[in-house]
Amino acid sequence: MGDRKKSPIEERKQQYKDYLDKTDVTSQVREALLKLIENQPKDPMLFLANYFDNISTSDKSDKITTVHQILQLTHHSQQSFQTNLIVAYDAASLAKNPNSKKASMNRPGLTGSVFEELLATILSNVPKNLHATLLERIGCRASEMVPFGVFRYCITVCYVFVDFVKLCGSIFSVLCGKQSGKVTDKDICEIVISSLKDALDSLQDDNSPCSILEAAYVLRPDKLASSLLSNKSSKTDKSTMNEDDFMKEMIDVFTSKIKVLK
Amino acid sequence: MPLTQDTVEQKPTLVIIFMYTQTWKIYAHLGHFLPLSTARHNVLLYVEDAISQLLEYKDENAKIIHGKFLADYFRSVHKGTHTMFREFEYVRATPHNRSCFIKSVWSCFRHIASHGELLSVKEYHSLLCLLCNDFPLDVVQRTARIVLMDDALDCLMSFVDFLYAFQIQFYYEEFVNACKEAYDHLLMASPTVVVPSTESWTQTKASTTETENVARLNEGVNSQTFFDVMEKTCGKLSQFTKRPSLQHIHSELSKLPKVTFYGLLTALSKNDDINAEIGSLPCHDCMLDGSDVDIILR
Image 1 (cartoon, rainbow over the protein chains, first blue to last red):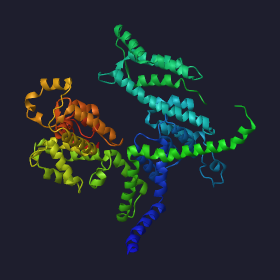
Image 2 (cartoon, rainbow over the protein chains, first blue to last red; image 1 turned 135 degrees about the vertical axis):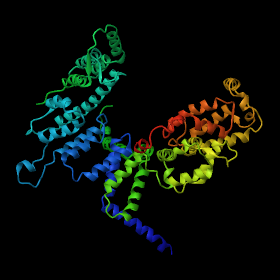
Image 3 (spheres, each protein chain N blue to C red; image 1 turned 45 degrees about the horizontal axis):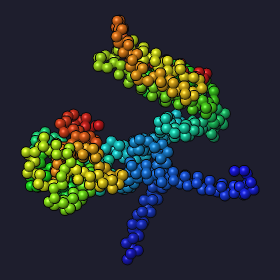
Image 4 (cartoon, rainbow over the protein chains, first blue to last red; image 1 turned 60 degrees about the horizontal axis):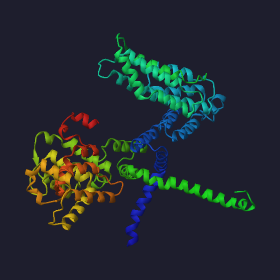
């Protein structure tokens, strides 16, 4: 009696298990959980949703999308971003078609053209006129092979750049205050831009912790506030600056600090 | 320590110990860490539920894209639409589910408030059953006790009063139960003895609410004592159990020298800080703000 009662449930369980194994759900979920633990995102549910979205679309997508998805897993300030970089580099350097007889198709390695495409994907949220100078500096020649060091440097710079553009946008809206229309006082903008420049100039080349602290000291809020206030009192002319110009100048300051690779 | 024959011989042992600790670390990383970090977000519960939903769904639909199904599931958990039409056990399983359910009650039925209609316990129960078909009556009854201060349970209630009281009762269920126990204990322990209250409590009493609370002064327990007991009770609750911050409870309790259990819960349900802490409902005055489309798409 006991056997007969128990067996259908057991059978059902086994059926389900077989089904999940057969359809790869088991391995996918296991992989997703491992990725989740590794990356420790703030919102695990959104992370899982994106992860499974990527899985279900990845059959159609190309190499660039796959690599981009790997890099997108976690923010660049997280420890696990470094691991993701390695995984992404491996995925990017896979040969296009290992069985092909043509030498250009079966050789593994990341070429400059694929790499440029990848950088463009990462920067796709930033308007093109803003990131053109950056790409000029870190871009490679189309036929070059990209070593991992360069890959890591460029990708990290791109992600920092995307964050920087976002920050610049919010700084500008703070500067605008309640003024309608996307324009604000030119002098104020120039003070902000020049203080960022000063801070970056005070950075030494070796990037020692001390010089980073010193740069942060130059950027401290009370100093910025006092220089803004001193301008306010001596204000005479009313020239203005729009958002595009402001962003452009800020980004010029940023990109001037980036090594030219070409 | 100089490198002698002894220490060289000890080396393999040291290596083994080292390897052992490393393995243990990895083990701890996977085994110990998994429950702690994922427990906060109840990841395993959602993954299990997602898979059982998937298995149920595949019986009805042969052509199913597993990745997409799971992605949709997790997206709806993220958006907070996942508790709609689910069984009660699932709805109350996690704090996130509870708050999402409260939010959907609000977004589905908020127009009842605009007509100013008053409904009874049974009517509210049937409304909730529309969203979760096995929603138990006793949760609604306990909510009514909060609204009506534990008497005349067949009275009608306004939707606003009901919703905010329901939020306290449903979201903080474990906390409410623990407090009730503490309160009953306190009531049994000191039936008639009046504990002299501290200075600050007496002052607030004298200045503001003396007249209207004269009748109520005879019932309930001393607020300060109740708060002390509650502080201890909260310490005993598991770290994953949601409870309102003690500072908000304190600010409510300090308004009166004596308090009854349901009086306190009513006060908590009207407290905007606690409402903001749960974060699923708008403040009391802006319940009808925003169009339906915005709320559904949000």
